[in-house]
Image 1: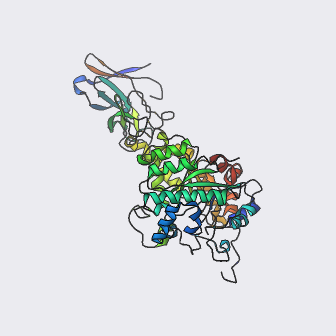
Image 2: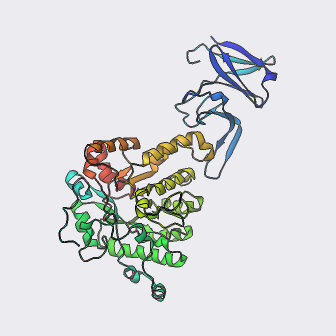
Image 3: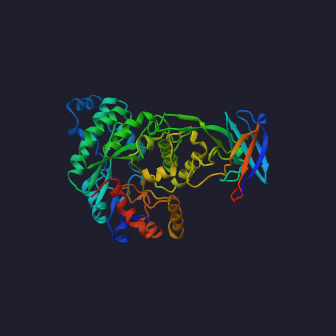
Length: 124
Length: 374
């Protein structure tokens, strides 16, 4: 079973904005980048910092020194405690993708409202 | 030399004691050859440069004597100095008698720190580096098949470094390039990438070894006043070099580069590795080309000679086992006598505190793989 939660009217989440909400006992960050919406658990799996208060950044990669590939369509959030980056869409850690991720939740706009879906699993 | 010598090194600090403590094969990853004065290189210099030397009454480049003050015990153990007053490590027969034969070493890696890098004349530096390499080949490598050499380069000019590597590298007895730890810029700098590429493409090893006379001080924050300050804290320079290799993305730009870190021990290294790893995780956007964790890159690309070993004698030696554990790899350390330097190399105690599987690696196999020796 999953449960849907209305977070806020879309007008309260402008482009580049974020909301940190308490849903079913969990602190969750809801982000908007352009017309894309993301939601992550607001707790860094590294050391427990409030991940969703961190800076939202484009994915910055490189194939060799001096080469920059900056992809704003795949944003990450960097934890304010240690700067570790997590993919907003998947919750996957950039520096340790195989072993570290934060819970990501489905989020969508329905009837001009931002709606979050939480599953019933314990991991949620 | 004094008539009554103290009993030489106890087995706690004598690298030659390795033979009694270890029944397997041995490769000595760092021994030194000392040029017996500029005159010894005359046969390997053109008439033009011999005349240049005579006109100016030039002597040895100053760099080597600054880095290794000749009469200090750290520069040469008393019992390894020739009795006739010549500098230690200037005589192949003594190298054999002091090190190669008693260790029954398969091979020894021979480094000549002549201070060529302290010469600012760009063309004379090339001539002198070439002379040292030809002298090494003719008077050392030709005369003992156990020896392998490090190519000396005019380290101030990348294009000239490359030219000399190309000239010498066909002689496969040269297995690496001596890169003095003190350089005008840290070696990760992009200006050096063509040099590092040349080293890797030739199957050679970058030997980061103490020496060099950069325009800056031997500390990252100004001039120390005394030799002991420089000597005790040489690792500051290596830290800057290793940090630069990581930060500048050398191991991405030159993925086949292998680095031997010599003359500085290793006990200081785990904390640097840990710190680079930690800071990369949060600051890696600064250097997005570093796409793998620095500790993985360092364990893969770096090897250390053990001399001098920062290791106390006695029961506290177990602490060193702990530090070796922090390396997170059994493949990073290479035995070295560091002949003729008078550093403590307590190899018997070291053998006691490392895992059994690591002992052959330490004593020979890591160096054999690094230098591709038979």
